[in-house]
Image (cartoon, rainbow, N blue to C red):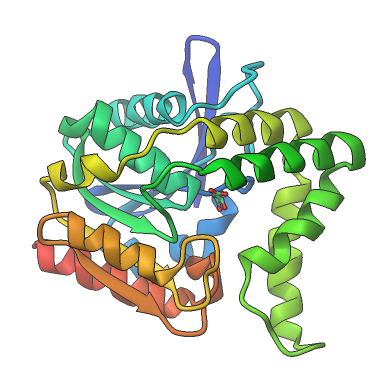
Amino acid sequence: METRFLSFDHVRLAVHVAGRGPVAILIHGYPLDHRLWLDALRGPLAAARTLVAVDLRGHGLSPWCGDPVHAMDLFADDVAAVAHTIADEPVDVVGLSMGGYVAQALWARHPELVRSLALVDTRARADDEAAKAGRDAAMRTVVEQGRSAIAAVMLPKLLAPCPAGDPSGLLLRARVSSMIEGTVVETIVADLRGLRERPDRTGMLPTIAVPALVVAGELDTIAPPAEAHAMAAAIPGARCVVVPRAGHLVPIEDPASFARELGRFWGAMG
Ligand code: MLT
């Protein structure tokens, strides 16, 4: 895997590249970074695509740029700039959760850059009033108590339950915690503001005119399978896959199933 830094105006973005063939851009969720995709970057998908895992601004190795709000459109324009720099043809886009909101914003703003869409553990609907109140509470938690407090609140929602003391479950929790705790407070607050104000994309789904795959974890409570089925039903020709026993982070909870399903999807595109 090779890390490159791309600069656009005052924005400096890290991208992590592995593999060969047509470009696929991988967009992580909140408040994570490219390490969400490490299993994918090191696995069989790299034989089918040049995998480009982006660190969204303020995440991973991409510095926070001073923006008080990380709107999904802002992130989508950054991803568009990456696509323009790295590829000379439309790219396959894979977005997990917040990355899926960004992927949908990319389709809304730059459809000519998108060859296919894989929407993973994500939703099309906007936050309702209860969810917005949850974002406000999370902002207070991170500002007043710090990143380990937000990690403690989020971990049980992100990962499916595992038996007490199970070593692989503990390792997974440590991997996710280290991503959350490595994200600066300013980024977490800006993300939460962007998530809170993101638009409803439900009405846009029928306009998606490229091959689409929707993936959900069976035990995901943030983006439950019922929501994934509804999204796939609204996108012409889309397929929905529910991964058994996984929670909200399918690519690291069940990397083999994730690689198999994404590989099949890309394979069927020819
Ligand atoms: C994510 O994983 O990106 C977040 O859970 C998205 C959200 O909270 O809506």
